[in-house]
Length: 348
Image (cartoon, rainbow, N blue to C red):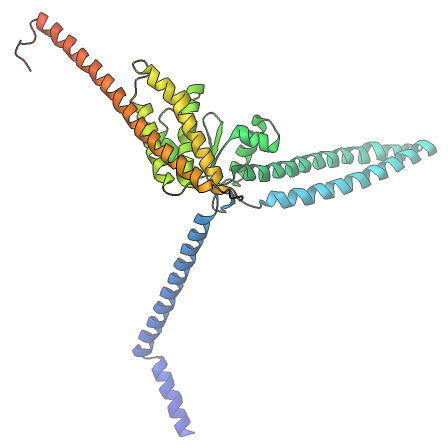
């Protein structure tokens, strides 16, 4: 018994000692570090997994299965069943009241069955609207494909509704956070799903506005930005150059002095270039592989490279024309100053 008591005292002393407290702290810190590393690892894995998802399926950007989708179906079913049961009971009561000429039963129909029936009908109507709206939500997501942007007109076509309905739906979804980073731009003509696409849009689209010309320019820039994200090398780098060229073209060119270049680039060259990118993207994403697919893709890549070089020369030409105008303006200004005696002849 004495030996056992000594062991107990020894254990008690050890548990109360500074050495045990230090050991306990080390174990606690190690466990905490391990949990932090585990949480960090899980976060990195989730970020990597989400990054590989297309925007319309990324849970950080959209709610794939909104709660409203389930509740609207259940609520609509319940309201429908209760409404028809209530309507049948009300009709039978009314028939009985008319046959028996019972005023009490008639009052029950007028002041109970009829008001409650109207409320049930309204509830069924509202839940049915919600159910239909959730069906449109799914159609909108499918319409995005792999892109992070979509034209409202395309979403309207996909859901077979008016553009005004699409805009109202989107504002509703943004308010309810079904679309978590989305925003409408270009006078409600384009929907962007994520903040990064919007930052690119702000960076490169210098002609944001509500007139048709501005919308056309900005839409082209947005399409290029989108393809820069969707396409792999070597086309990705080519598109990156096209974005920069387009931005410089719109921000530096003088429409009045370079009208011919401006009109051709805006109305023909750029749209045709985007058509080539559209075809390239279709080849890249098509499940059916064609025999000459690689050859066609190489031809498009070569054409895009040639177009980039041509656009660079076009920009150089417009800058040279503007520089000549600047020199002429300087010459006129110097002549006027000389005539006024404000500038020496040998002034450089």
